[in-house]
Image 1 (tube, one colour):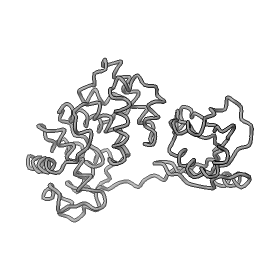
Image 2 (cartoon, one colour):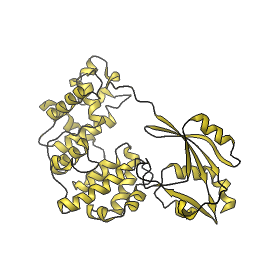
Image 3 (cartoon, helix red, strand yellow):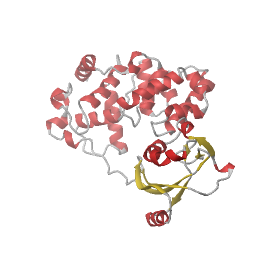
Image 4 (cartoon, helix red, strand yellow):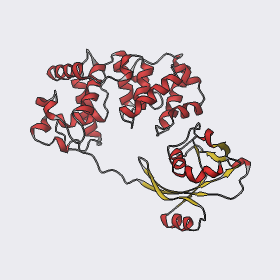
Length: 341
């Protein structure tokens, strides 16, 4: 194990990525970066990291912010539950820890939105606690090192990977070691085209020996995305657009969206769309991680009551916390809307 540790840390010292959150051991900044990078590539996440720490430079500032402020700062990143959990966790830190960030993995994992990986990343990087941060990169690397042929989602395989990751972890530099494996997975041991000849762990890799590295990790087939059918109705009155704040339980909880009708089937959706007289956008598709949104956008000429939503100027819509679908729709129909504004 010592040979693996030396190899990976030596490689890291020469090749580590220059990332903005690596200039500090501040657990708050590490936390923000790790949450931003969930489901997000580094190059996409970096601007949002700067935006968030500028808007909320401390855990106290984040805790005292209104949820809508947090959602607005997060706007464009998607998966808004991450932003809500950031906000909840910050308030919990203020309430239960007097604003002092927990220092141990066992305490960090109790916070909303902080799972095993994020807790390990924070505790190892900020506090030098020897806990392996097992993310997708580490799962891929270990599955190749051990040439694991079973699906990595199974409980048994997940335990094998976690145990091995902790076994090879450097107890002297656990934070650097975790980050080294993250960089190795991003730069060398990539999902589709691993650069095995440049890998510092080449001589330890069983999958490379058996030429099965392109077959690892083994994953269970993905579940098919659920189809949904939404007809958005765009209501405009006195140069303002009707926006509706989505309720608890919606995937867009507390975000603003155009009023819409949801249909149970494609047949029903297309049948109703064919009867519309002012179609701005025909049948289109917006893909989320687990949902496939079939949608269309029509002008609504029905008079809306005051309690159906909020009338917002077009400029102010861009300052609302909205799903990414809203600005995409507005961009597609801006020429058609121009005469109304």
